[in-house]
Structure formats: C-alpha cells, structure tokens
Figure (tube, rainbow, N blue to C red):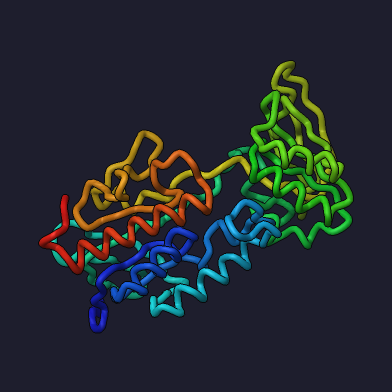
Length: 315
C-alpha cells in the first residue's frame, strides 16, 4: 500500500452532516483533515425531499442543497474530501492510527466516525428483484420516474410522511402503508398528508412486490385479520427506518449498544483513546440533522484538544 503523503491530524470517516461539520471545525482550527466518503457527500441527508426544521432555514431547503452548502463550506476551510473512497479497515489502537481504503492507507492521530445509517429492508419477495425497476428507497433520486403514476410509500414515521408529501406533487395517486394503528409523525406532517390527498392505510403490511420487468402490483395483508388483497401500483418506496453502519468500527474494537450503535459519552468519546463518533451511527436517541451537527462540533473540538494539547487533555 502507498503510504506517501498520507499523514493527517484527523481523519473523518463518512461525509454526512456530522462528517462535513466535523471537517469544517477541525480544518478551521488548523488540523490537517481528511474526510473519506464511500458514496457522495451529504449521506442520507441528500435524499431528504425537504428540510423545514433546520434552524435559520424557515423557508425550507432540499437535503441535496443543504449538503452542497455544507460541502462547499468544508472545502473552504481546507478539509480534503475523498469521494467516492470507501474505508475497509480501521486500526484504532496505539499510534499512529490507520485507515485503509480500497485505494490507499492513511495514518492519523485522531479519528471521527460519522458512518451514518443504512436503509432498513422489508425483506419480502420482490424487494431485491425490483430495486431500480419500480422499487426504491429514495424519492428524490427516483421520484421523477413516476410523474402521473400510482405509487405506494411504506412506513409510518416522519421520513415516510415527507416522502409521501414529496411524491404527491409528482404522482397521480399516493398511498401510505403502515402496519401500525396510528402514524408516528409530527402533527404538521399529518396535516400536510391530508391536504395533499395522500391515502393513509393503517394496520396493513406489504407482503410481496410483484411484476414482470417492472413493478405491477403488491400483496397487502391486514395485520389484524390476515386478509390479503392485491393493489396495483407503478412504484413502491420503502421508508421504514435505518440501521447503523457500524460494522467496520465494531471490527476495530469500538463498543456498541445492543442495536449496533456506537457508544459515546457526553464528549463524543468512544471507548478507544483518540476515537470519536458523531451523528446517526451513535447511541444518541434523536436522529436529526441538527443533533448530528451538534455532536460533530463537540467531537471536532475534542479531537483538536487531543491532537494539539495532549498534555492537557483529560481522559
């Protein structure tokens, strides 16, 4: 592996809102900063149809635009963003710490893990087979393919509601399918669902996605009676939550809770010295852009103290 020119004060793994914010603060404070991102800067934030609850942006902003603004600000202060470049192995104990990617191996004093989440699957017949053929996890990525068509959105949380509202401006009809007997959404979103004529179907599970070359229909089941029925649709958007993308950190010795989220203290420290975590991958119970940003600021300031003032750094 090429090690030339690969020494950094801090490496941030992941470039979602937490990773980009951490990069802004570490680079601005003078630390030589590298951010590694497997796909593209912004993470799942980039796929949010509309962000209305971020402070100072009361008029709302798309997740993609907010991600672009964060990326530009991060680069402005001198952080290096390597994207796409996937981290595949971490060695986090001792000095120096190393991060190996598919392209290189990098040495660093401190690491901030902002690994984010991955979409949760329904794990039903047809889900894998029809992905990209009418089945999607991202409305902003694929919604334009369904102009004037019928779609289903699966889930009962805020992200599901936001997806359904977004698609209602494109599709001819939108059904929101939730297996519970009530939605888990904010009241403001419920009102928007109603005003946008989204058909909310409760106590119902999607059991199978069917079609030929493209999605044609789904099999729905009443969770109380077990009765099944077939509903025609052109598209299925699954929004049932996320799971932490923490395996690479676990393999390197970072402790997690029973759900796989990285355990951090009030200063975003993990169980390993010089290793911090921020954002959705941590055991913080609130998964929002705002909380990710706040955690990242703390992690960045802790990393600065660890690298530049080690004798004063309290453990």
